[in-house]
Length: 429
View (cartoon, rainbow, N blue to C red):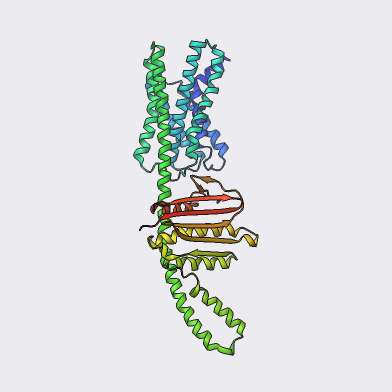
């Protein structure tokens, strides 16, 4: 028993840091032969720990060197086991190190308090420490690691300086811990408690900072993607307008040629030709050029997909908006509706309605369509149902961005198989 106790007293840090790294990295994409790689990394860490006892010196500085070495090995281990960049490996190992140090300090402090005030036996403390340690690591994961998991990690920590500072802060907590252990012999319970709380607060501050950095990086990346999407939609509007103008010219020529055909072609075929060419020439004269271009596009798409499309919009009411914003706002709303309706097999439900009217100085935009399945919401917006969530779901975000740009209000509702989008925009007098 004493041999096992000595083994874990000497090498317990290896198991603690591995558990912390697992909590903060388990969701990442794994490399082939992940289990073998993980066992290999654990074996390397354990071997280094066991060999370290043969160091000729054992003081605060050699312990700090050991901490730095294990930090580097953990970074290499994460790179070995997971498909992540070096920067992301450093970022998450830093978070795992802070969580491990917090759990170590919190568990030790509780046990010191328990022994002082409740006379806990050594055997109880021996088994209580690993339980408390794992509990506190799990708590850190719930409070911080789980929040990091929801973020897109491809572009985290764009600044190497920020990454270096985070890594330095985490290592400093361990180094000061080693210095405190070396030179704090004989200090009273109060000093020990004060330092312990200071140590834990530093770890929590570091984890909070990393969570905020991840949040900001994620938002920045989303904004960049959103701006690029809006720019592409603006360019698409220009190209669509040119295409439709060209088609209208050709349709006009075809009409003249149809008139010349006269009785040489069956009447039914003449009517079919007229219907085909008239769709561009007569559909959706709303009074707004961008909206006309968009509606013709979406009408053709809906006809091709056998979706009924009802549009009642007075384009003149949109005069206060930029043409590109009109195209993006209505385009994204209709595209989302088409995507939802296109998967329905019931012909009666393959229907999209979009209306815009003036009401008490406000432009009210209302879209409605059927849908199937369950929709989850985050911050008031439905989440994409596609597998790759990194580059999808920006349609609703762009709608919200344009709505907020004009000082408006957006509301989304999904109930009993009907999806409803309402936008209120104040119209300048």
